[in-house]
Amino acid sequence: MPQIRRALLSVTDKTGIVEFARQLQALSIELISTGGTAAALRAAGLAVTDVAEVTGFPEMLDGRVKTMHPKITGAILAMRENAGHRASVEEHGIGLIDLVVVNLYQFDKMAARADATREELIEHIDIGGPTMIRSAAKNYQDVGVVVDPADYDAVAGELRVTRGMLSRDTTWRLARKAFRTTAAYDRAISAKLDEAPDTPGLPAALDIYAAKRFDLRYGENPHQSAALYSTSGAGLAGARQRQGKELSYNNLVDLDAAWLLVREFDLPAAAIIKHTNPSGCAENESLAEAYRQALSCDPVSAFGGVIGFNREVDRATAVEVARTFIEAIAAPGFSKEALDVLSAKKNLRLVEVTAEPEGPVLKTITGGYLVQTPDTHRMERAAMQVKTRRAPTDEEWRALEFAWKVTKHVKSNAIVYARDGQTLGIGAGQMSRVDSVRLGAAKAVLPLSGSVVGSDAFFPFPDGLEAAVKNGATAFIQPGGSVRDEDVIAAADKLGAAMVFTGVRHFRH
Image (cartoon, rainbow, N blue to C red; front, side, top):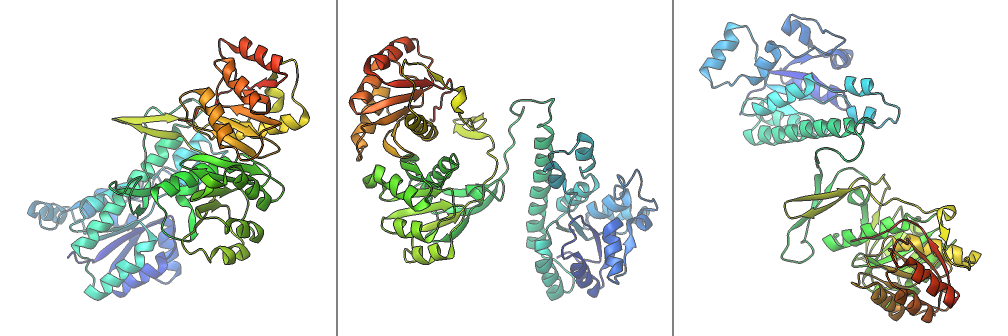
């Protein structure tokens, strides 16, 4: 185990650093430090040697150069059991450094500022910090490296027990964490600089880093291993579980689909998802009523599904949910009264989700990834084109706008029957659009008379529209763009239906 005699402390995040340094000094470990860290330690009454005293050079170039010197990097990188290394450090008067405690300039905070200039971003790129961290991690056999204040207590505790030594297991664990830290730091810089106005479009290289949150029991099927990784503390991957069994792979996939759907709506909304498709969705002034309407679309399929809400779940909504077997719920929050009601269902998984901007959408294919921007398009009524002789009534317009939002989240080919802020029948994932029309009607429990229909892509032939009208539909919303658009419009006119084109397609594969 390496004996710790000298420690270098240079941190931007000073959480816990004074107490940690005090524990090091109590073990007769010499403290070397820089700038603000040294000032904070001295203010606490600790004896500190400035890096400038060690190197013989002052901080230079507005602080850009402080620790990049052979008497620092050599002191960290020298291998204690290498005779040549020992001779070199002795010849050049280099005192060894056995513990490096460093965290980095907070580039992420500057990067989060919408008004941050390129020059400000550049100045927040740490150079000396990563150099010291990587040097110590490379020489983990002889040097400990601490990059996270969360590790201070454990390291100090081990040093007390061993009288100033760290085990090889500890230094190896700390080194791996150090390399993860510098890798994530460089990724954050690269990703932010690639967002510059002079580098439009998707990045030239795809660099993915996500920390493992926890292992899952299995993947889509029991013979597949799985885990959840998170790129940030928000979104479904960063959700807080309030109660219930551990989340499964399929739970998380369905919860994400539910969460993305309900975020489309301004009014309180509920969505019930089965196998990534909505079995029901509704919006209403009352969250509880929105859930009742979503459930009434297809109560059989809702059994064992997951629910998304775009408002905090209140007691009235919880009482409604408790009447049906549901696997999991995603919502921005749960009131205490709602938790009291739902706690009776011990296995029901409740997760609180914090919204975040949607990043690139990734799918795996053999040997690589497909990447696209998220489908965040929101249709305004003024941008739609009425293509039939009859324009939609006000009631039909509201239903069409609702149906279009839901259609965006149904697997292609997608058909959504809706009325008055509520889905009535959903046809998903069929190879033929007319089959989706028929399936949506076959699944309907509520009457389809006076309904509207949303279609994620154009009707290639009049047959789908004609079948929907027979089922009770009176108005349609679709992208348009078929070579037979005129035939479909003529069929709508003949049947007295209204039809609007969006010019925007919502395939979801």
